[in-house]
Length: 216
Length: 216
DNA sequence: AATTATTTGTTAAAATAATAACAATTCCGC
DNA sequence: GCGGAATTGTTATTATTTTAACAAATAATT
Image 1 (cartoon, rainbow over the protein chains, first blue to last red):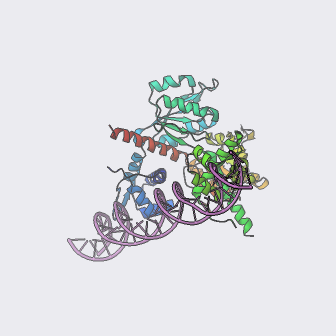
Image 2 (image 1 turned 45 degrees about the vertical axis):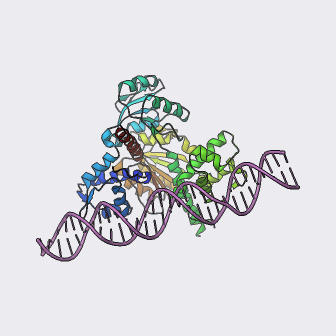
Image 3 (image 1 turned 135 degrees about the vertical axis):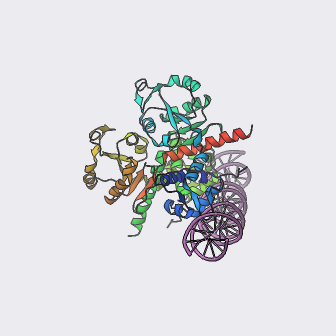
């Protein structure tokens, strides 16, 4: 068993490794050492080697890492081979943006349906998918594989819809409402807090303003 | 000087505190102890007290924290009093979604203009703002206060536009392209990697699948 | 007013994470 | 095929972060 516990700190860095390796592949770079990668990414070579070794030895002493193999392996660790199918609930502006964001498809995720309860939006075509009425949700999930529900609905509906999709057997929720959804451990949830990120930017800008003021 | 160094780990939790305190305020809760808050947020009371104490003693022994005061103080730490003005560059789906997301205004940020280089989009009204042509950017920034540029442009334009707004004196960039923008330390940058968050969800779902398989 | 309950701010301890160090191994030029 | 340069995997060390502990202070209660 290679089941040494992997910390969330490491997991959160994996998509970033995947991104840099994909870029290298596009540039037709075949091999890379932890030292070179560390310079590109702005982290230590030591951390890269230790992170990768949580999952096994992908490199070779004296040579480094084969970019293609390493990228594929990290893809596997991230579960890309599952080709997860996602539905979007909420065809508003954010739902639209997600539906049209091509990177998700490149990463192996496909959007298979979009739902909304607003009859004016039902039937509208978004990125080749006709928006379905929310009351078709149960029926759709019964007849199609759906792994992930992407929630881009107004705040006040979020909890109830989360419970509804969980009861239908969905195993992952990607939540864009500014609340920390919590359900049973059977359902994995990632809460995206866009404004948190903006506020951290605000903190850093404000800190600089204060520092500049102080150094007069 | 209360300049003990505050770690990023702490800063990243501040918006979350702000969010919970705002919710409590709406429920007209006047006071809260670190213990109660810890139960609501799912973190330890000890961490809450230590986090808050990076910035000064906002509580009172035997009483707890006054919700209104604490929320206001955290707001100040996050720089909300600056009332930062932001422009959106890129009036595509994501630019649209950001422009229409009301939470940013609630957090003290205002979107003052939207730019695009596509003449078909120029003039279009998004959330009461007419999309401006990119070649008006210099002129606009010269004549209006702009603190933050929100970049929702295609990948290949991101770097050059980032440098362009930086050269115009903008102090903060909120970048939605899947790349790690880096500029001089004069300009603060937050890179939003939406697909990273989705891939972490994928990792956790995949891990559960493997665990379930193994426990058969 | 005295006593008991709370609850903070802060220091101490434990746990976690990041970095450095280095032996073992492989590559590569000659 | 030999020797030096390079580079990993892994262990050790250091730094950071989280949690626990507790004295000091306040509030609530009788």
